Image (cartoon, rainbow, N blue to C red; front, side):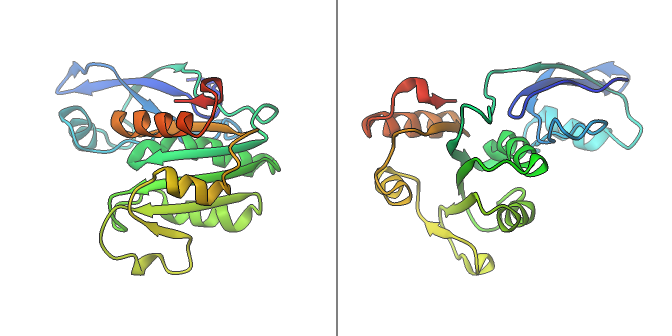
Length: 209
């Protein structure tokens, strides 16, 4: 009924009617940019009962209750002059809002996205990330593929394996100071990345999860 005022990286709570009964409320990251008034987009992986019900019952015209925004996982263009984004799987969702926001405003903040995915066939937003990278000289995207072939990612910056201390040393040239670090993904991924960064001397206040 009215635009939702939110910052890039925040999330909202969603509920809807299923078989004429209200569903529980679940939280999802907003992927659209705050600059896109009149559009509200979410990144949702269909895997549990709630998301399966949403995929099956929601059609164009369905009413959805959205509450929010919530969260302090927010990109600040003044504070985050140099940013390293660590994404695992669908954890890339809040970063899409940030990257779209940066692109729309043509900001010159230096951003490096390390995106960990299980395989080359499981990369949400692949095409748009490629387009954003080509359009923004200040954005670098590195895809880290857990297993399998990478032939479909020809021409992109791709590494095989997992994000670890050695890979972080390589992409940062061992310069960890004066950066903001954002981490989003499965709980184990976030804990591992935060621990690795702290072991490399990154202050906890510069790590946002």
